[in-house]
Image 1 (tube, rainbow, N blue to C red):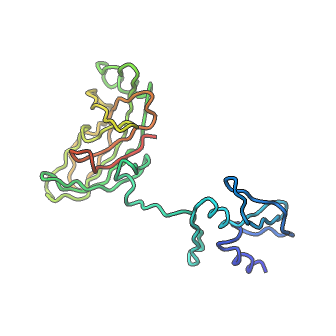
Image 2: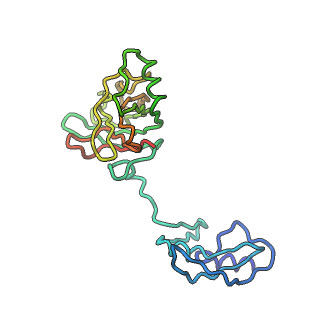
Image 3: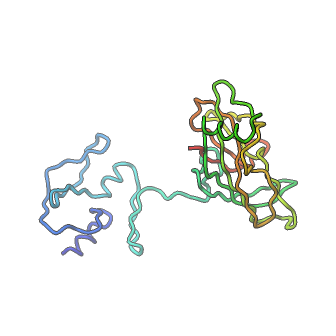
Length: 236
């Protein structure tokens, strides 16, 4: 009976690692999702209310799929991780490794890039000032953001050529879509500036200046001259 119940509940039933031993019975409880009454049949098992997963998911506009081979239930559409970070509208979260291609008349190489850490505000300024006492404090209404990025070169059409990395390859873009100016400050060590052959990687800091009111700017790496392409990352 227990086995049959689990199977019957597969996609339209209750999700639980195991069914508690004890009596259960239909209840007169009604389920509303976003103010709309559902047709869910709610069961009371050992004093707890259980509701069909499919009813709730579909009431929220989500797809529900059952993978019999893997014994898995999937709610919602699967995320295509191959496109995360490749546009301003789909920036990658911090710590996400994004594969990129750089194609131009001069360069033709591939690699991986990630932004792993963000330090902002007073702490960022303390690190920048400690690096070089001649570094200028942020302008009124602005503060510093320090981003720690990692870049790895995995392929280069010119196998014996190096790829030069510089802070100018990274740009901070405001929430409203405006580029912030490159900051001419001495970045904390290790800085992002270096040169890499195929197979090598490097991690370093880049300093940006941002409006204090701009809580979620984006960082982009290696955009085209017209602002398209490149890799995009969230800062929080």
